[in-house]
Length: 355
Ligand code: SAH
Image (cartoon, rainbow, N blue to C red; front, side, top):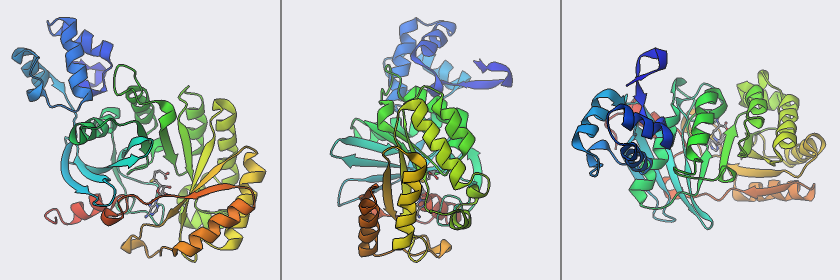
């Protein structure tokens, strides 16, 4: 089976139910065989274990198509709260991280969308060695399918907060959002999906018009352009004012509130004055209720930034609230397996044999 003009094999995990039915018929099978194939794939089951499919169909699929199911290379289970962090290998050996988290309202998976990242945020481990490649929509979906199978539990929410910048892999991100929310498939409600971005303004404006009511989460991390540009090179292309303008537009077009992430870096962005400036900025520019998620820095040795103490974080939050901005300090799940996102991939790339 060839995929369009590129002469590539069809990536079957990226197909819809209807497309699987068509594929089965093209391969001389009944349409319901395609439906069976689709159901197995959404459950992260490898071809050889799809026992109700005729062996001949399975071997044709193995030869003529591509099934890009990630493989679990490493699994770290938190003894505290059941959070599971995975290192997953794509079919070409590139590794990314995904995390399974249990919340009161259900299970959420954090997915990666690129192998590496080219955004260059100074405190982040994922970007230290740059970007190797984008993940396809099916490789992003595959992380959830595989985790669903591994845990045996239903996944009700997704956050695109793993390795990579979703809006720097725009088409595959949008395709993934359509696949994962398909009611025939994993059927994860778009309202239970968060897309986190460092602030690629054209992507935010485009996403607002896709008819996908996801929660947009903006990694802000600073309240003035000089500090933000020093922390996040993307700010030199799209300054805070343009970014907040795009957030406002996102809200106006979709009716969805935008939330902000603010990683606290000791002595860099965690002062009382920073909190007041942040509150002022959001109130003057967004003009709609907004929420700030305060994140305690996960220390990455190579970057030199320090995590503030809990007291500083609580004071920062109290100042925001006093200035009329809603804020929470993000609950830290899996603190005993707390490698910052991107560290597992980094360590494995540098020391392939290290456990
Ligand atoms: N590219 C997306 C997803 C990144 S990861 C984005 O920039 O939003 C999700 C969040 O974790 C982002 O807000 C990111 O800035 C933040 N982050 C990255 N490294 C971190 C670290 N070491 N400690 C705490 N937060 C970090």
